[in-house]
Amino acid sequence: MGGPTLHLRVAGLSILTDPTFDEPGSYEGGVTLTKLAPPALPAEALGPIDLVLLSHDQHADNLDEAGRRLLDRVETVLSTPEAAGRLPGVTGLAPWEHTTITTPDDRELTVTAVPALHGPTGCEPITGTVTGFVLSGKGIPTIYISGDNASVELTREIGERLGPVDIAVLFAGAADPGRFPVPVTLTSAEAVEVARILDPSVVIPVHTDGWAHFTEGADRFTAAFEAAGLDARLHTPVPGTYFDI
Image 1: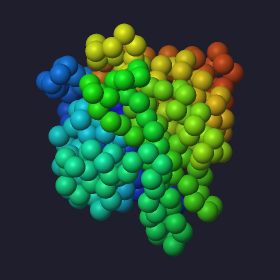
Image 2: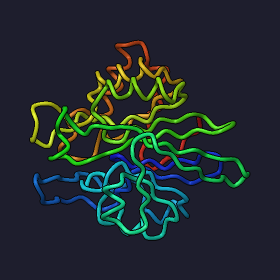
Image 3: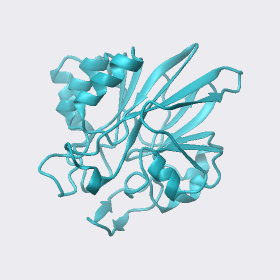
């Protein structure tokens, strides 16, 4: 949909990551975040959503006003314990905690919260707590959704505990809101390192375009994977269109 918002169908479930459906504009706060592009589709065009995976709620580029309204009509929203304390109806999962969701064909999809760090070590008092997710189940591909994680080392631990990973959805864009000397999400080069660590068959980049503080777009991401010889694994979404894996 643009930004960090990806609509997936997994084992018959309609799943949405970090919903952002506002029109372009600026959001004031500790720093000003400016959205440059509208959503590729309105939220209503997606039909019913069974599950929202919300990496965190405190930044408008991951949850905006329209996204907040969408949460009210979704049965299951998973996020951090801190987000659950701020948002009604949200279930908070600490790192390595999991929950199970029954799919339409009576399989069980396990959703495990995994650690994420939204910037350099010690950034949490400024950026707040964030989470990633791993989806898994019998006959279901294992999918890593990074959320706004900037730590390559954390992905090594995730792979050791929950791998092998079939599909990696990587929030990248080298986001730089101006609070730290380093980006607060993965750079394209770091995304290549993550792909080498987790060794997924498919890498899906999101969170690379549409906001002024994203400093590395989809073209930069693709170029990094081509230089590393990993471009055959890339499935870069075209906003507003679906693709099969």
